[in-house]
Amino acid sequence: MKIKDIDHITLSVKDIEKSMRFYHEVLDLPVVIETESRIEFQLGHQRLVCVTANDDNVKPAHPTPGSTSFSVVVRDPLSSIQSHLANYFVPIIAGPLESQGHNGKMNSLFINDPDKNLIEIREYQR
Image (cartoon, rainbow, N blue to C red):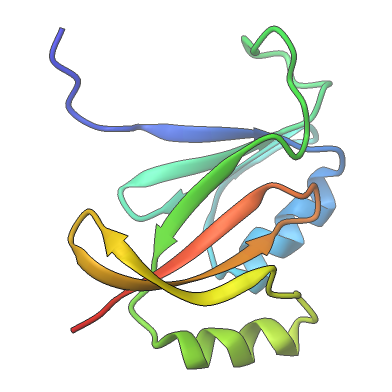
């Protein structure tokens, strides 16, 4: 088997409306599909899917809100991101921190979504 890419990431969430507001309004992700128990956002070439316990699709054995961690790469400088997050009253858990990423040196901020999933926001140094 030769895996080519990741198609989507699915998050178990408690409140689909809170998740929609956070990912669409705060993180500016476009909504692609929205139902009562599921919402899909465009995230680069992939999708970020949020589902509640009521979603009828195939699920993990123990879907748990707040158990996921993922990272996104931004084009904007982290200083602008910090201001943007402050405008939405989203606390920064850690950062900016410098580390080595897949494509070189980077700086990161860490935040939580409404279900306490951990999101790393990365800016590669130029």
